[in-house]
Length: 281
Image (tube, rainbow, N blue to C red; front, side, top):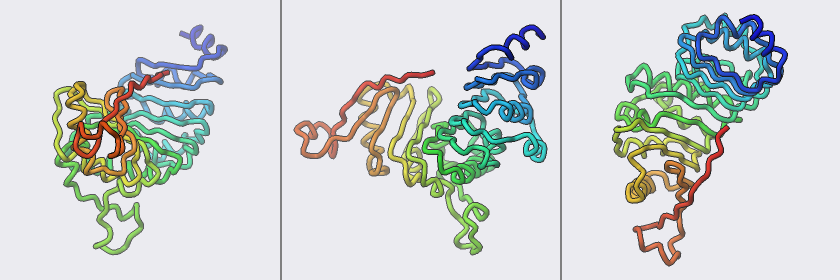
């Protein structure tokens, strides 16, 4: 192991995947050109990860595909630094809530992915709403990715969120606000479904709560057929008339103007479908 760590520290490693608890190996690594970190190990310490990030200012993307162990906020504050190149973070809701408590640490962050699904109870919904509030403090973020399962739940749609700290309002009548309304810099929303999950108008109402979203990406195996995609779009349009582009499972669906000769194919609009080639690093 010592030989391997020494070899890595003297190499040009740009992507690192940790498949086990990184508490033993991350403190021993210093990779000056590291750009991407993926942690899959169980109960990874967020303090250890944050200390590692602080030693690697070139890191651009962080993916924590595992639960992080509970941490003391003061300990995290002691090790967290300025992540001057970090543009993308993917993690659980708990982890995001801890990291984004330090908005000044992410001056160029552009994409936040919340992993799910998340149980739609009041505690978790409040946690997600708090994360939205934290994201609103980082104006460089134009894109967020969320579990479709949660956006489509009745509990999510009816939850009454009181964001007194987020809005600095003192009147009890004015303190009730959905945190989505604070996300004025978010123009791109991505939602992924779990196979077999069904949804109703709650999804469309949830998307409509984001005031500035112009581009919606939806990933759902139930929307593979063109007819299902067309039905989805026709149900979505009345709730979200300000959307400019919709992507369903690798397909870009664009609105056609009413004077287009093919517009009679569907009432109010016609769907033109393009194949979108996604290049994934």
